[in-house]
Structure formats: C-alpha cells, structure tokens
Length: 417
Image 1 (cartoon, rainbow, N blue to C red):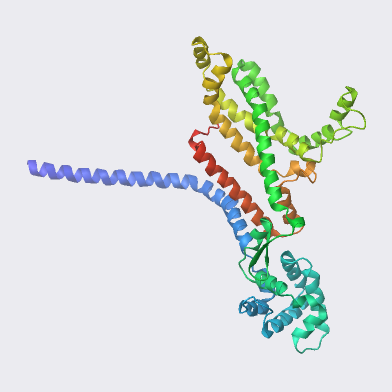
Image 2 (image 1 turned 120 degrees about the horizontal axis):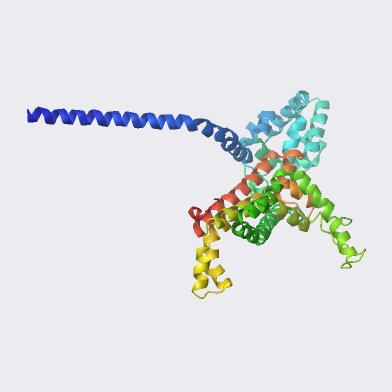
C-alpha cells in the first residue's frame, strides 16, 4: 500500500543517514589516528619546551625550598623597613641547615641574581653563625655584615624565596626592583639588554635587505634561463646547504681578517696601504657579511619558486603596449613576485634575529646579538630564569612581527612555492 511504502522509505532514509554518519566518524577517527604521532611529536619537541621556558621566566621555587622557614616568615612581612624578629631567627635556622646540607652555595647563587655579591654574603654568614652559640639573631647578623641592615637586601630575599616573580622581565628590559616592589631603571653602565634587542633588530633588517638585493636578480636569472643552465646555477645556490655552517663561518674569518685574503688583495691592488688594512672581522661588519652569505639561499628559493610561475607573456604584452623595460618590471613583474619577497623576507629576518653561531664567531663585542647573551646566561652564568625571560621577549617580538605582516600584507599572500 502507498502508506506502508512511504513509511518504509522514511525508515530506509534514516538508516542510510545513520550509516553515512558512522562512516564519517570512522574516517575522522582514522585521520586523527594518522596525525596523532605528528601532534604528539610537535607537542613534546616544540610546545612543551616553549611552555617550560615561559614558566621558568616567572616561576622558581628553588630558594624557597632551601630556605623554607625564612620564606614562610617573609611572606608575613609587608616589605617596609626591616623584617620582624621571627624572620631573622627563621633565616638563621635555615642558613645553619643549608650549610650542613651543602646547599648554601646554591642558595647564594640564586640570590646573587637579584643582588650582586650576596653569594659570598650568605656563605660568610652561614660560616659565622655555625660558630655562634645562639642568642638573638639580629645583632649577630649585623655584626657579621652591615649589609643585613639594608632593606633592599631583605626585599630581594623576600622576592627570591617566593614562587612567582617578574624581576627577570624587569632585568631583561634594563629595569630593576628595589626593596620589595619598587621599579627603578638600571644604572647606565648596566643597561645592555634593550641595546642588544635593538641591535638584533637592526642586524636582522640589514641582513634581510642585503639578501633581497642580492637574491632577487639571482632568482630572476634562475627563473628565466634555460632549464639546463638554471639547474647548474641552482646547484651552486644549494651548495652552502651541503657545507657545514661552522666551515662556512671559519672561511669568512680567513677571508676577512686584517691579514686575510681580502685585505691582501686590496693591498696588492694599491687600494689601501699596509697600515690601513680594514677591520672586517670581529665587528658588526663581519656579522652582516657572514650572515648574509649564510641566509641568502633562504631568500633565493622562495623568490625563485614564485618567479618560475610568472609567465613571460605578461612582460611581452606590456612591451607590445608601449611600456619600457623599467615600467613593465615595476608595474607588471614586480607585483606578481611580492608573495615571494614577503615569504623570503620574513623567513630571513626571523632566522637572522635568532642566529647564534655566526655572530659568536665573527661578531666580537660589537657584533654580538641577543641570542649570544641568552646562550651566555644558559651556559656560563646559569641564570636560566633571565635567559628564559630574554627568549620569551624575543619570541613575543617574532609573534608581533607575524601579526604586523598579516595586517599589512596578509599571510594568505605569502608563498613559499
């Protein structure tokens, strides 16, 4: 009957819809399982280290664990004047215990990041306290060293024994926290980090500009030459990728030093005198030259991939309509290659501001970048919190750059191939 056939059709439609939904869920689950190893790999090797760096820059409970009684007592102190008597007694007990446990040096190192010279102060105070029979700790502390009467020292101890702090970011921006929570600029001779951030941005921009000026004609040549010749030139462009970065950098040292190949050639040509040899290494000039050479392929390859897709018909059409070579290039060819220019520029700039090995080897004092100071704090001073704060600020700068690029140019217009 018509009614039963209609009801059967509705049931069949619902069954078909349910089967399609199950099949779709299975496909999505299968796709998720396929990409799950990649997601886990990215999370473990990329996201988790960044999260750990962000946490390290503001979180450090280590000194509070070494000096637990002092940390608890100082939490009750409002940071004005000198702390109450229980805080002196708590610190005395903690210093005696830390010395016997062998952790007094570590405590002094952590506090030394806040105020220079406090590592020796803690060590000396712990040694002297062990020789004291007991009694009122405040006069003993002041007799050992008058610096214990400085409220700034106690404020630094209160900050350092806390779990959370913004002092690392203040230091990274050439500010310091005095007392407990007063922000003040660093002395002029200690303001180095902002200068290094600005130098890093300047070097990154100059290297990007030089790579663009050198790479654009090379990429155009690769895109327009016959295939056999362009393949040979492409091998020459890719050759640096097959050579160790350390070898390339040390080669520039041999070329650019005062007694190097380039200065010898200039002297032989009579362009400079023996006494007037040009210092091209261990300064910012050497950094710019070596980094431009290292990063040039990262500009050429995006430009080439975009230029290869630009048909020569457009330039011939512009010429047939009366446009000269310069006008045709400016109004027809250049706008079509801007996605490659944007991709190459942002790639080179981001690599340049994070470069470490090349500035360390050829830069000297005037060519060092912020990455070299981050490495110093990680490897030499062991101030990992400050290194994390500097790295976080550098990461924030890169993210702001991405945002500005997206607002001005648009990430959709960036092409790597």
